[in-house]
Structure formats: structure tokens, C-alpha cells
Image (cartoon, rainbow, N blue to C red):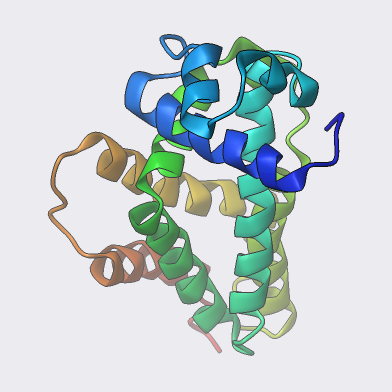
Length: 198
């Protein structure tokens, strides 16, 4: 950020979230974001290099909030099994409560060449790392199987949550509520993770 008017920066980010979700990243114009944020077109460039920079900044801001919230939520649980279940629920709850942001993450970001090829997605890797930490913790306590590879399991678990999120974003109606979807997805993985000899 080149200037330190944080309120104006946040207004631009909020405006971009609405415009990107409504029109799509490629059809959205910087002038439309400026109008929604109630700033002059040129003001946008005091904070961002271009439209793609807005998209990535938007994602980074949101990912930090999501990451901090998830850390706080899973810290409330001591049991590894309950942590997996809570992770699934909190992830899907975010998608339901933040439809515009979810649509941008699920659809628009993945069409950005810069994001997919050049961007070092550190916050997202840290987010996946939370799942890996839970699995390792469960293995250390003898709750989860020792032969499970946490680096593979974390992506499989996130992949299932991500696909459910994608379906919700692209569908006009949901067949299942958050609690049901979270319990089903975490249940499948816990059945594979759990050390039944314990």
C-alpha cells in the first residue's frame, strides 16, 4: 500500500469484492470499483498497481482473516478428531456467510494467470499446514494411523471441502446444510485416518 489511509484502502477492497463477484474479474472495470468505493479513478492507483493487484491484495487480506479465525477456532479443541470436525465446519461456514468473497476465491482467482503461476501463496500454505499439524498431532497421540502421509492427507481433506464450496458457490440452492456437509466430509476422512487398533 503506497498511502496510509487505511479506511479508504478498505473501501476499495470492499468495493472490488462486490464488483468482481457481480461482473467477474475480467469484465470488471477499475472505474466501476472507484465509483462503488466513492473515490476518484486515479485514487485506485495510489494503492494498487492494476486490477490484478487489487485481486491479489483482496485475497491476501481475506486469507489472513480466515487463517487467524481458523487458528482461534481449532485451538478451542484439544482432541485431534474434534479439531478435524471443527475445521470442516468453520471452513464451510465461511463460504456460506461470505458469498461474494467465496465466489472470487472459487472462480475469479483461478482464472488469473499471475495468481496461478507467479503468486507465492504463503497464507494458503499456512492454512493447509493447520490440517497437517492436526494430523501429525493425532499420529503422535496414537489416534491416527502412522502410515498416513500428512502432506497428502491435508490436500485430500482440503480438496473435498473446496469442491463442496465450489458447488455451493455455483449453485442457486444448497441440498445440504453446513453441519451435514461438514460431518459427512470429516467423517469420510476420519474413518481413513483413525487408528482402529487403538
